[in-house]
Amino acid sequence: MTTKISTKIISYYPGCSSQASGAHLDTSLKAVMPKLGVELKEVRDWNCCGASVGHIAGGHVPVAALSGRNLANAKEDGTTDFVTPCAACYLNSHYTNEKIINDEHVRNDVNEALGAVGKSYDGSMKVRHICEVIAKDVGMDAVKAQVKNPLGGIKVAGYIGCQTVRPFAKTERGGNWETYDEPHFLDDFISATGATAVPYKKKTSCCGGSVSVMSPDKTLHLIRDIVQEAADNGADVIATPCPLCQTNVEMYQGMINEKFGTHFNIPVVFYSQLFALSFGMDPNKDAALHQHLIPTDVLKARAK
Image (cartoon, rainbow, N blue to C red; front, side, top):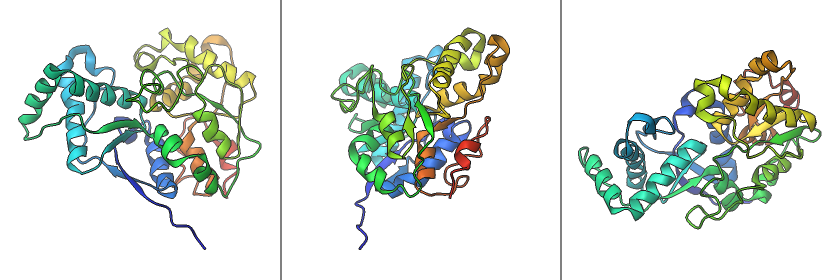
């Protein structure tokens, strides 16, 4: 007898990276989350949240209004959880939501802007990172129950990056779901697939973020250290939850090799791609393992 999975519906804000550099995160999440009892209801007509570069010239009102509009649209859809897989989107949306709740001036400014398009927002949505949903609402037993193709023998360095758990994860409004300095959720995700999570002290180190995109010469040493420790610990792949971390750590390995005389060629994937592969799903259509700069042959070889 098959046990019916109770479905939780959440407002899903994919963020701009889902349309380009992080499309493989979006594809794999949309493939695996229904199997974990979560329906991703994409926020209607969503817009960019402003992320990091929005603060450079926009000022607080335009940037807050961007996230406020997304939150207002999600509330109109009748859900209570506003969930995103992107660390930058999570920080921006969560921060804006908190300001709307706690700062009357910001709330009034945002609602004045939203009023121009007939919308308003009161801060009543619960902004969450999708990894919190998987860790707390789904749980590792449910993940393990979906594993049809265990990834035994594959060694994975779990690179979380600096923004997913800072500064909200250990706060009441952030769900109190993780620690800042020794987070374990990504290692738990990796282990649930049957793969081995290698020891990895660089798991919350910064890759340079958007600075790496604009001025990689200033941050290559940061990425080199992240990849070096993964290599030193025998990792076959690096897994991350963060779209920008995935882009930076994968894209710049060639440049790092040229500058520092290294020979890195380690695939950098999303945890959701490991889920899809271990669930026995299609390595391209569902896991999107074909959308990488560094070939993921070590994983594709395990597809069934």
